[in-house]
Amino acid sequence: MSPQSPEPSATALQAGLFEFAIAELVRRHRSSFEPLWTVESWAKLMIWLTLNSGGSGDRQALEQFADALGPSLCGRMRQLFYQRELESLGLKLLADPAEAQVLVLPLAAAGGRRR
Image 1: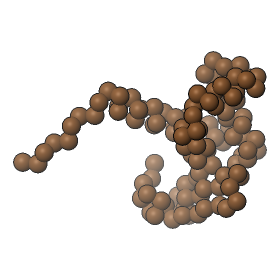
Image 2: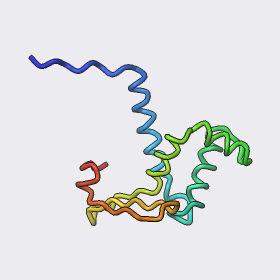
Image 3: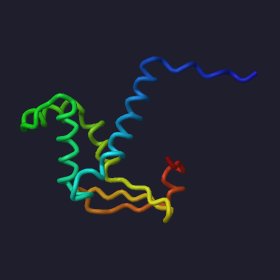
Image 4: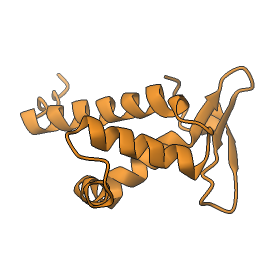
């Protein structure tokens, strides 16, 4: 008989749900802010998120929101924002305007997963 893995804790389940929800939110709304794939569109997304989270649109509220997210979550969100999977071409594109290079990977080598 093979040992069964332990059930995930409530905290682990909540964390998984949070990660999923944030990723979906970014993916679904990243095309709503023009011009696409720009620092300006990223800033507009962050303003929209701040406003919809109960913050005001002033500079202090925006900075407080970004601080509350923390660098790790903010970085993951930014990576998702500038990442695209071009399934018809079999490519994953990472193109953050703050980076000097654009990274193009085959989808199979980019984790082998497709949404």
